[in-house]
Length: 288
Image (cartoon, rainbow, N blue to C red; front, side, top):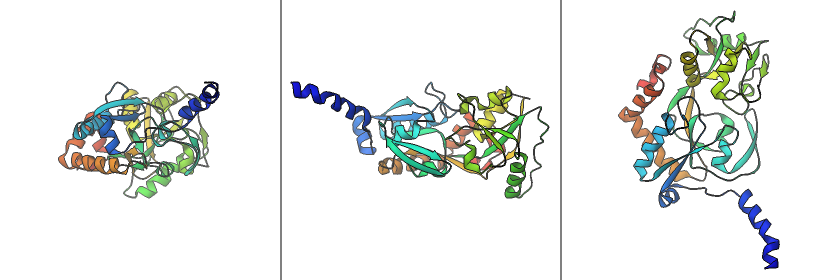
């Protein structure tokens, strides 16, 4: 008994610090449940079981015959919650610095495909088009660029607008300014500001300019009518996908097959337009 008491703290520590529950398709079917890791964001995950990604994953659960369970997470921990790896990110580079418990099977919250994430997790086939737009308060003297048929030129003209300006962003997300080589601007990272309230922070005067991805920009335009404007894009087209552990190859194959069928049937288009009406004005390919 004395020996057990001596080693008990170490046993508890092992369970706390060791990753668990990495699951591929067979294990998920055996458990009868799929855990959806989701950061409440835009209309992908509303936090109450609704949203584009939640709806897609519920259909997939029906397809494979398991229960759907939503696991709320945040941008700082979501990659570790899936992969079991704690990482340190600098631009496109990532370093694994520890292990953390695994809490879910699929990330679904409008996860932009960016290089450092692809070093840690796998992505599904793309399902949602995006880009990084520059938004400004309506009272800013900066004017939207005049688009041409040369996207590369349009991007350069937009990037020129940011030179010498304070620009809002958020570290370790798709709006981390370090990802886009904006060294001529002055990045601002406000403590406590999340993707969900970045546009609100801009409207309140935290800066004159912010970068924001397409889905959040569309929501911001409807949420703050007449208070913000889109200046242009600092990237070409980006894609969003669902995130998978590199230890779940069969789950990825199965989901990609399902998502491909959802696309080809036209059902995915209907779902996207439900949650993001008007996106086809900017990305007509969603109608295909």
